[in-house]
Image (tube, rainbow, N blue to C red; front, side):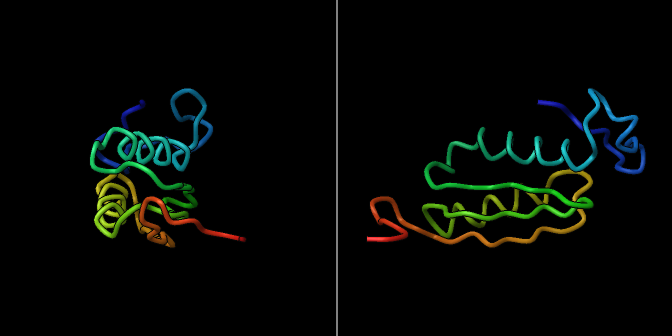
Length: 99
């Protein structure tokens, strides 16, 4: 996992970012690592995208608590300007989609 500088104003533009990653890519990586390392969030399918420091969450999670935690983790990531969540709640064992 890569860490971001404390002050988002100190972040480099995409051409200068560490390891050649853009700020949005770094934010996405930090959010994903935070979600994966949280033992209270298990199951479901989550997609994390970042555009212009706006985190876009989509997919299904197993509970409303998991949905809240994921949003909080995204918001607590340095440099995030907004979080757009389209996470659905599908309890374990329920099937989504076709028959």
